[in-house]
Every structure is written in structure tokens, then in C-alpha cells.
Length: 536
Image 1 (cartoon, rainbow, N blue to C red):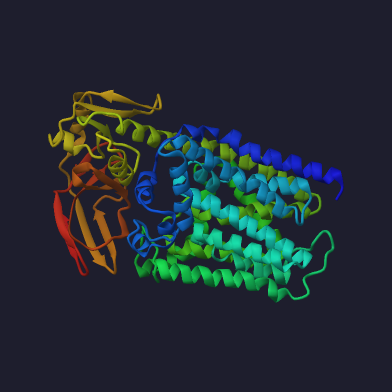
Image 2 (cartoon, rainbow, N blue to C red; image 1 turned 90 degrees about the vertical axis):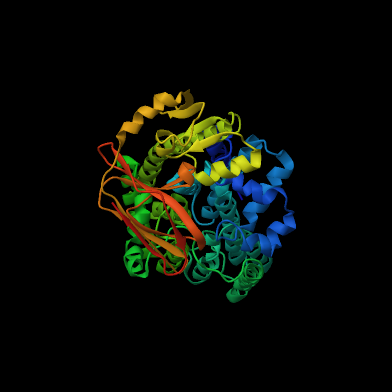
């Protein structure tokens, strides 16, 4: 291979490694956020073998997922660094910085350095990637993607050079990717399509003499994963979190592509929608030139999203975004217009990335600061209306023995249920938490009114359904444990919820004009057939 080609590749890979480290180095300032404290609780007193093979652990895990590689990766950090979060984020950032180089190597199997570099850069500039790099709890997406890309590279090389042992190595990488996150399980479907209609090899190598043999290791890895999952996790394929009644599923599935597209366009301004248009054009070009491969790739990326498709999070579209980046890179082959499309897509993606990165980091930094503060303030101090999810603070208090307290609701202060010595309030203009006297905040109590409000809760098939009214605009919040937990929810919705003897709560409604009203404090059993109603 010419030295000039090697020098170009080395330069591109070096830049692709450095760019995310430079762009996202501020994550090193973060502390524990989201599910980090809960995950630390899980891994702290368990061995590596338990994290991989304990039925008790996975049958009682706090989410209905099987991600053993995530726990192993976090356990390695805990063993090496203790509870010093900074090296955890360093590990996280280094893992993320390897995505683009691997994407580049994969694209180089067919394309020249320039479009390969552009596609790899797009892969780490998208909205899903921004979400991943700012949260430790999403490391399974990052490291799973690393193994998926490595598996794809090894498989392509295997079929190009007719080397079965490379396909075996690819299968091992695939098994690791699947053990990180379920979204990578359909990867062999893409390989099967590549065997039938992949883009041509620029080196002009012949296809393998026995192509079916190259899929056998992938099939063995898939069967091994299924046996492992069934033995440890069980047969559950039920999605977790938000749910919907059967009557809504046709609409949810029909609108899934549009809702996924919105992930890349919402809050990104004109640059986001320009990027979407360019990606769709590139995808259309790829479908036309390699329909089998493109269709199999999109199917493999979309099917894992369907079970959690009630609420689309950016990370769910990670594989779709990777495919979009690859499509843009291959669009460079279109005469005249191809190069312009690639350049415009890269420029638009960088603009979107800057906006999304700033906002995502701001939210992550606020949650991180709240966690740090909670671990240091006195037992009489309260975090006031924190941004961190309730499970983060509860697990943090248990894990770190944090003495501070918190409330997500106005009513406990207004009704005198809590008497804090200080309230720590987020100051948006200064992006920091500052102390306030309770009297400084209690002026908001005047916004609480007694107004009409209704609620209905139904329980069926492990799912809690609700409907609130009579207002169609504004915000509804379910408040639990007198403000220690609160969840903003849609007016009509559903969530998978275990049966409990009693669920005490109240509902708060915040009107667009600034006033608020509450339901009474109620409690009802959560069991099959429950139908609880309240109205004022």
C-alpha cells in the first residue's frame, strides 16, 4: 500500500480521535447524574461473575433490560478509581473518541479518505451522540457501538479476503456488542444483506468461495447470546417505561419515522432541518443503488426502537444516525452534487452539534452540581425543585450517605409540612445553585388556587393508565411522598408499573398563565382491574 495513502489515513484517524476529546472535554467536570448512583449501588458489592451470570441480580434489576457489559465496564471503574468520578468520565470520553476512527476504517473499505472522514465526523456529531457522551449511564451505547463497528470491519475484511478466522473474530465482537445493548442484536441481518448486495470492493477482490460459512460464526454468537439471556434474564421481552394501550399502537408505529426525524430537528433550528433534508436525500440515493443492504440496515435499526416507541429519546436513534452518516458518505459518489451534499451536511451537523452540546452540558452540569450539593449540605437544607430525577437523589443519599433533603413540589413549604433552614435554588442567569431563606421562596405560594381538577387511574396488564382534566393546555405533575418524588406527565398516558398495595399521590396542574392547583392527597390500590376516579 502506498505510503501516501497510509499517511492520509493516519492523519484522518488522529484528527478524529482528537476532535471529540477537544469538543467534549468539559464532561470531565461532571459528577454523578441520572442512574449513576443506582448503578453504583448495584455493582458495589457484587463480583464480575455475578454481574454477568447472577439470575437474582437480573431478575430484580431496576429496569427491564439485560446490559451486563455496562455493569462490567462500570465495575472496572469502581475497582480502579473508587468514587472519584473524574477518571470514570475520562474512560467514558476515551471510549467515545474511538467511535469515529472505527467508523472511518469501516468506510475506508469502500470510499476514499475524504468522504470516509466526513461520514465518521457526522457519526459523532449527531444529536444521539451528544446525549451519550454527557452521561455515564449511556456507556453501553458507546461501547456497544465500538464493538458493533469492530464486528462490521472484521466481517467486511473476512468476506473481501476470504478469511474465515476474521469472521470468527467478528462474531466475538458482535456478542460483546449485544451484551452491551439490545439494539445491536440485529447486526447479523446487515451482514446477511451485505453478502447478497454490498457495494463493490475497490480493490477488486473476489467474493468468498463459500459465503454461507462466513455467517456461521455470527449465528453461533447469536444463539450463545440467546441462551445466556434466557438462562440469566428469563424470557421477558417486555419494554420498560412509558406504555400505550393497544388501540394506540397502530398510530404510534405509523408515526414512528416522523417522531424519530423530529429528534434530529427539534431545538436545532434551521440547521437541523437542513441536515434532515440532506440525510434523506443521501438515504434515497443509497436505497436506489443498494436496496437490499439499505433496507436491511434500516430495518435492523428501527425494529429495536418499536417496543420503546411511545417516547423517543435521542439515544434510541443512535444506529439510525450512524446509518445516516454512512449514507451521506456514500452519497459522495454521486457526480457533481455528491461532494456538495457531503460538505453541506458536515457544516449543518457541526452547527447542530454546537447548539445541542451546549444545552445538554448545561442540564448535565446542573444535575451534577445538585448531586455534589446534596452530599455536602446539612440535614436541614433542601434542594428546591431540582432537575435531577428523583431516583438519582434517593440512590445518591443511600450510596453516599448524603444528609441533605429535597422537594419537587411547592405545597410542602406552603402547607408547613417542611421547615427548612435553607433552600438551595437554581439560578438560571448565573447557572449555579444559591441559598435562599424559606421566606424568599414562599411568595410563590400565592399562585396556588382552588380550581376544578379531575383524575382517573386504571390498572391493567402491569400498566398504569391515567387521564387528567379538564384543561388541555398547561402541565400536569404527579407528586409522590409529599414532594420527594414528582413526575411531569402528559394529560393522558400510561406507564409500566408493578402492583402495590397502595399508591399515595396528588396531582398538580400548572396553568400557562402562572397559577397552580392541586388535587386532594389520595391513595388507591394498584392491582388488576383498579379504576380510581377523583373530581373537584
